[in-house]
Image (cartoon, rainbow, N blue to C red; front, side, top):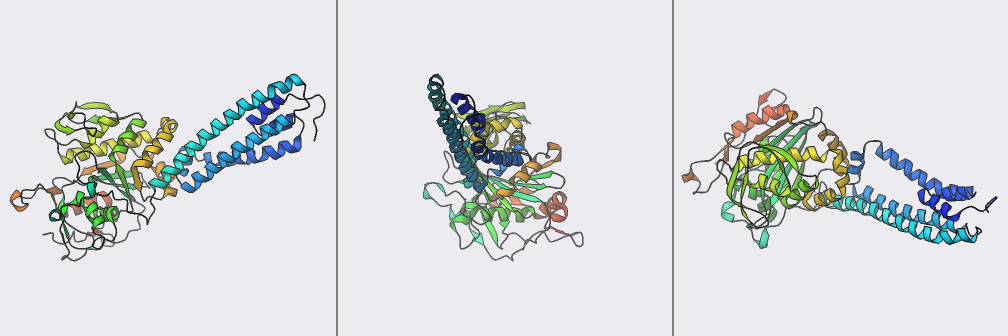
Length: 466
């Protein structure tokens, strides 16, 4: 269809089709072509509006699904090509314009083309970052063992990880609870480490009905504990993951899944999901969200602290409110050698920083930093949490507060140091399973495996641990 009346400006037509494909054709009086170019864009915009209706956080969470993200990447590329075609068509249709007008259209087309390519490349790169992160973070319900291998190809000391399978297995009963329970492990495989040990072992359990959260930290020196499949693990709990990975005949569930089930067994609550965090990525996440704010309960003076970059030794921090960047925040959750400090105080600080990071992650200001944030998360986090439930988890996280969160570190009296002459001089902790049972019932009620929901009486805590 030809233009009607006086020739229209081809440069303006190109600009209009740049703003919305089809507008330039409508301006030129070519209504069929306007509909051809315009309606696909309208459909795409309506789909986007529908997706955003649930909130931008929920939309961003949906992009962590690799299928959704990859579909959007393809759509972004196609829409960019469609815009360029619409602009080219508008330019070609303006050939009948006066020469002075034709002389302006090519530079305008080149400039706007560059803008389209740059804009769609940026959006495509951000969307691809979601795709890449989702592909690496979510390992699925049944998938590869995400346990980090020991460094330098070495294996844990067998004398520290012997297993006795003589005890009777103690089954973990099923539960119909809506509770979401995740094992969070912090993998520290930096300088001075011979093995990738789980120095952070934290169970986080959320009741989605009321938003109440329980955080339980297991000290790394717990040993001589009953195994969920029967027997006793004589090594320390922070070596169980690597030991299970290297001994699949004894632990067919694999490294991290074994640790998840074991921690749930001891705590008395089934663990459905696990998440593994590399501490280098944890530092990056804190920096990306602009740091976190905590109230340090007491001064820290750890002259033996070794910074992960190896540049200096020693870590000091005053008591009171403090803003932590990534480097200081990582030291805050790793230091344990200062006066009055130990694995228990460190675990309490880890819970504190994790809660502070959660607050930052759900603030609108983080949205602008999503590309960097998802890149950091993708390179440092592995989980079997279902990707299609991430949006629901974010909704629940928005209801959580310090007032609805209970934090416990399973040091004394729940785990105590046996007499040194019975441990060969090695510092270990042994759990008081009766105390653990009472705490589990207090925290989880009928959901606890130590509680008989039918009769309201406590079941046997555990087999006797030698």
